Length: 200
Image 1 (cartoon, one colour):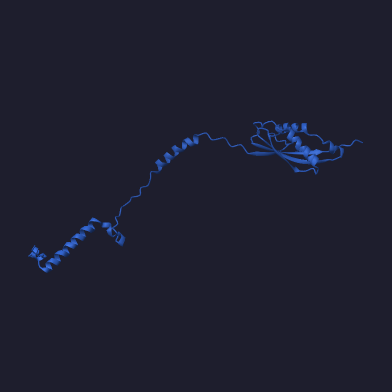
Image 2: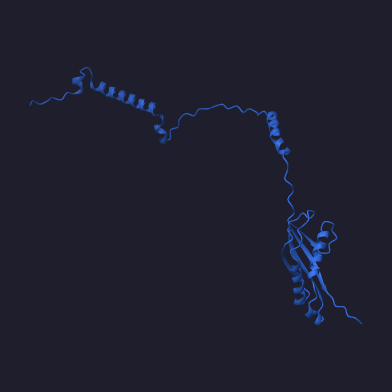
């Protein structure tokens, strides 16, 4: 086979000289790069070139306050007209068993009568001439049940203290609170006095 002769650019384009070939290649390179830049403007963002910022004009308009106030009043009207819940009952109250308060006196009287029916002078204390006084506080819930009881001032004699606590426990349950007592729990302070009378 015969050797194939290579042909140069001048052979293909006999009208081009060396300088013209270089100039044509440079122009072609510039055109190609310009086309790439125009087609992909974000390609240089990573190198620190920034796109031109566009400014927008914004007008601040004062809202129609009169209309807003009227709408707010209309929305609030149903809330003002809605029935309010009744005030929550107080959690508890503390009274004396001998209270004179008109709210608690009738109920305290019933409680005292029930305790007196169970309260006795312990025989061993009588036989040994033991006397004394003490104070107990006991707690009732609304249905009249006894929650707890404790000595807050002792007589100094366990037999007297125990006898008084036992009288309260035996007297329970007590009547439920009447409607006039608006509490959930009632703490009652009660004094017990053991006093011997000697005949001449």
